[in-house]
Image 1 (tube, chains in turn green, brown):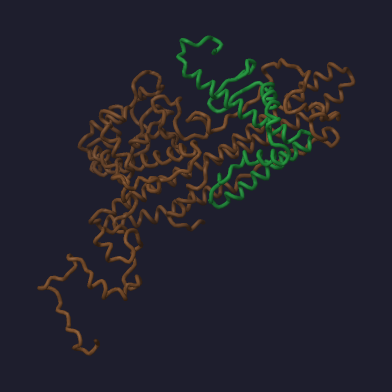
Image 2: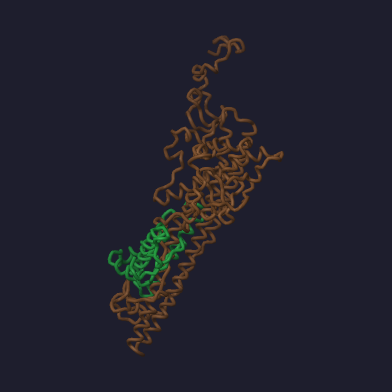
Length: 120
Length: 450
């Protein structure tokens, strides 16, 4: 975690500084797939294969979700942000949340008397 | 209305993966976080441009604000879609828990009817349970299907007018694109950000602690109950070893017959009092854990406690207090003890199955039920779920065209006509007619047929 990240965890989500997200995304951007691949990776990340099983209506729901995500990505591209850059920001959000989650778990395992007031 | 068999409906209900759907929800929330971060950047950079450029930067600031508002809306639609997915996840877990419960009852009935000499009552119980299970599972399929039908993710708002943000972000000189920067902030942008410029991000479920959102396992926040199954229908914690239930809201144990919390608030409420917890690996429950692990049909050891002869031992399972429905004095006491035993066995089976499914998903592998996972050779697993009337021992198997598991067909439909002669020659000893009572066979050739 970077030093200027203000985070807290409620067991569900992590609050971070948006600056950290953009910095991480910039570092990730060169590693991300470009163009159509970025779009496909982004859609696949949100609509995992076989998540909806064989329940009637499940495949239709998956298609609606896939279409919804695709429309969002297309709109973002139309607004002037490259899909590759945006995909990097999404990936950075997941990575920073993961790091903060790990840090939070570590802190929770330290006995309270050894914690300083700023949680370090 | 779905019209599937018990096994078909059960397979369909267990085929969908709420855990994977939750991964999608997390992806959408991070999508929203990226959109919000973009909006934050646009506002900050637009203001900086305005300050640095004076009135010449007004247009840039307006365009930045316009785009920032649009990205906020995109984040909103992505978040609302994630909320809808979370609703689907909850509904999915509820339907799967229902399905596991119905199927466990069905297996219980099959096991009862699989003994050497099942009674007529056992046969009737199996027939009724089978019919009810099929109906309930099909209703669950319909319910889940209805949930999918109501899943209507929102479209994004139309992007800002053309000309305000065209082309790719990096290197563009247009007014709109100039404020986007690249994936991160551009060189020269402010480096110190006030803490209110924060976004909420969500860790992928695979790396998150158990018990967090999307998990049906009680996490460390559950204290002594960490590792138990969190029933998505009631919110109760269920012990995967014994089937006991605990209500974390009222901090009381749950009566296995009525399903209602009872007694005083238990000491295990906070889980941080160093009380040692309800041990299931030693002492009173040490004898029950092994039996309970054998599933519904094999929960004999725990069921042994629920005969009404050991109320003190049962009370030990519930913090020293006997569940009200099992307190003696009623004419129905014996029946209630039996009902409690079966209820616990079913809940134990459901909890163990659901936890195993989540742990398999968390580990990135597909879940295989015990019979398919190679435990069939163990004493507990052998023959489990396979009724006795479907299983032939070695000697009986010789009478069948296909030994082992098969569907029963009457002789007239089973195509065994041509085998009669062959079978007569291979009859096992216990089927040979006694000489005294057996009908004397007519000698061949007397009637001129041979």
